[in-house]
Structures are given as structure tokens and as C-alpha cells.
Image (tube, rainbow, N blue to C red; front, side, top):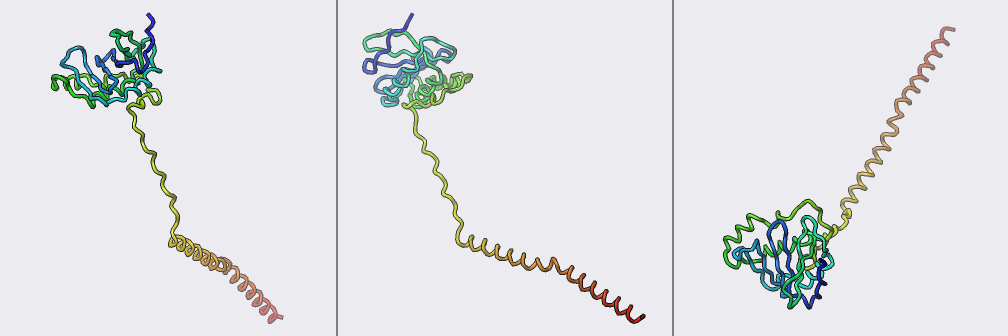
Length: 213
């Protein structure tokens, strides 16, 4: 059976989200309040105050993602029309609904039995009740109604060498140039000595031969 048309925002009196596997359900009202419930017992319910959710943003986020066919892990959605008390459920991906359940858990107050409700939260934690078998779509975990802008990291200023550093580099360069100039003649000194000794040997040999004549 095809689902009835989705009511407009002004005709919507609430949005219900229900997880098929974990047993958690969440009803969000136009004033931003919500009711978080585990199972069907009244003792396992909690209330979020008005202004907890931005209802119009949630409506704008959920409606384009609704699909009629159910698949593993999907969350049932019922957008309730004013004056109508039964609505055909449709579905959205669990990763798209998970942030709303987590926010409700963080801000809600148990209505009847606080100890019992906390036991349900510990026994069936929302964080782990959602399947992790599928990757989240880009941006799916941060709908506008829940997201907070994260400031971009400031770029580090470029480090410029100080005058003292420049002076040190210049001094080292000058010293290296002087050392190179000093080492250059030293490298050819042994050849000068060899040439002188060779010439002296030739002179001595010539003198000895001359005296024998």
C-alpha cells in the first residue's frame, strides 16, 4: 500500500522515529520538545524540553531522505498530520536518524522511574544499538538541526630568519671562502718542492760530469 502524501511543515504535528532492532522510539514535536521511549512500558520513557530540537530543520532534513521500501537497519518514520491519528510508516537510513536519538538521550529527563530508565540506557545503549555494518553517507551524521560549525585551523605564519641569523650565515660563508682560498695554494705546494729538487738534482749531476772531463 502506497503511503499517503507527506504533510507540509505547517500541517505536521509531530515526527516519530522508531528503530526496528533496538526498541527505541523518538517523537519530536513542533516546539522542539521530544519523548524518548524504550519498548512500550511507561516507566521506560523520558522527556526532552522544548527547544531541544530545531523542528523545521529536522523536517527539512528528513523529508527528502524518506523512502517507502524498508531495508535492513532502516528507521521507521511517521510524519503525523494535524487531525489525523494514524500514519503509514516510511523509512530513512539508520545513520541519518542516529544523531537525533543520541541528542535526546543526552538532554532528556526520565518521566517516572529514573533508575529503571538508566538501566534501559545501560542495557540497550543507543550508541551501540545502531548497526555499524554500513558506512555513513557524507554529512549524514551532522544534520543542520544538530551540527555545530568547527572553526578552521589557523594557518601558521611563515617563519622569517632574523637579522642575527642572517649575520651568522654571512659570517660562516665568509669564513668558508677564506678557508678555501687558503687551502688552494697548499694543495700545489708539494709539486713546487718536487720541481725545485728535480732542478737541483740536474744541476748537481751537470757539475759532477763537468769535473770528470
